[in-house]
Image 1 (tube, rainbow, N blue to C red):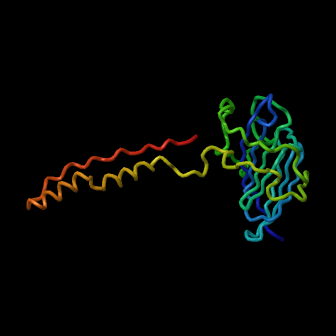
Image 2: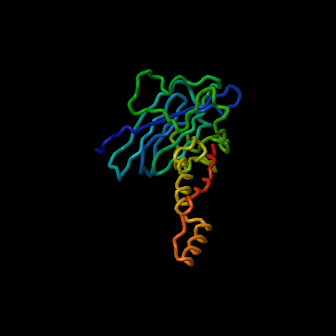
Image 3: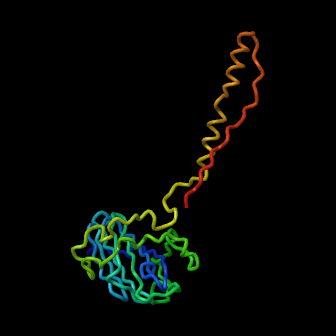
Length: 220
């Protein structure tokens, strides 16, 4: 009998009392190398199962939500590394859910997705294209039978769902360029060296003037 593993689950959320498409839960289940997934999504719960031949384990987790979600307007996206959900909250409220699950007990596998999390009072500045192009229900829900690998996400740019997660640190990019510029001799120094050679004596080397470092503006 294959070993069963509880996968890591991360989550974040948005809320809105007036716009349903900005009132949802981000949920990611880390279950790599699973060619086929079995998801049973209901208004109050989600059950996930998937077997990985390479990991020789079956991932399984059951979640009972704090409040109801709108199954028909929820979406999923299955990749080789994980399964990502955007679960629309059924009740439109400005306030955040106080937690993801109905049970108040801390679950060791459940963590906050800080790449996607924003504070309740900072939602206006967060990316708002997560639900773009998500009209209609998810094919095959519940059970998701016959669902394509993209889960009906269409042309969503997932790189915009979080902050700058996965982007390299750009803070030191200008420093390397400056060091390289400082090592290069100036044209005036070359001219003085040639003139000194003709007179038979070495000229006094002028102090290197560091080149101005180009400052890269980080795009938020």
